[in-house]
Image 1 (tube, rainbow, N blue to C red):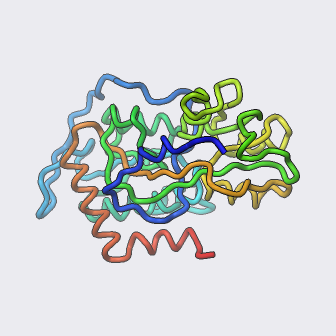
Image 2: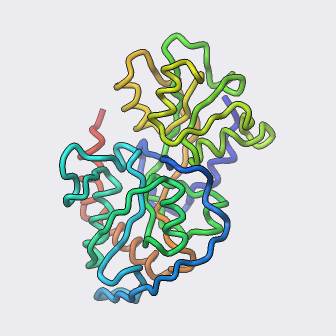
Amino acid sequence: MMNMKKLLCLALGASLSFSLLAACGGGSAATPAPETTAPAQTTPAVTEPAGEAAFTTVEEGKLILSTNSEFPPYEMLADGEGYNGTGLEGIDIEVAGAIAEKLGLELQIDDMGFDAALEAAQNGKSDMVMAGVTITEDRLQVLDFTDSYATGVQVVIVKEGSDVTMDNLGEKMIGTQMGTTGFLYASDTPENGGYGEEHVIGYDNGAIAVQALVNGQIDAVIIDDKPAQAYVEANPGLTTLPGEWVVEDYAIGVAKGNTALLEAINAAMAELKADGTFQAIVDKYIKAD
């Protein structure tokens, strides 16, 4: 198995992490978020909920969430109307709604590619990004992050009977979601614990990567555990390798320097955990084994 110990240092040591088998960031986009981008030409509205310091939001009375709906069970398209008629559902969607309610704001959800969701928060087009986002050194340069609210586990999907193992993965062709930490880590150089760009193909989303595996175009898919379970269940003949490819925490991202909003979100999340709302939402989508 590749040496992934260097990745674990990205976890927030003082965060409120939960032992959920969660996502680490997925979706569609072509390239990772740039280091710097000119700020959006939007004048933020100032909100002052009772007992909280003033914080800014993009639009008065709203909390705008940028996300990517390709990451079940955290964010996904709903069969029906979804959460509050948005057509979306999932853990992150409902938790974001609960945070907005705590802050006295109306939640607006903007569904887009994963990298675009990161950039929207970075550029002030959304108030926060919540899409199974893990904290990396590059992302810390352009976004501020809340306390971690879940622990993410990435696994490897292969065909049943495949000779692929954790130890020889670097000799195979690997599919990942473009822009995710799985793509970034796997495509890094062997000196940095990766397999090299020549062994990794980035796809717009996990479903396309899994279809490429089914079609025999690649040998394995690196993806987060919960989506992996859904893909394996939906595609007979696939399985996951024993063990964890990497473990990491993920959090909510906000524009760099928007400390008051960051603190308000952290406080709201702490209340949701304390009163049981957070766990109730998780239990709705992730059943105990």
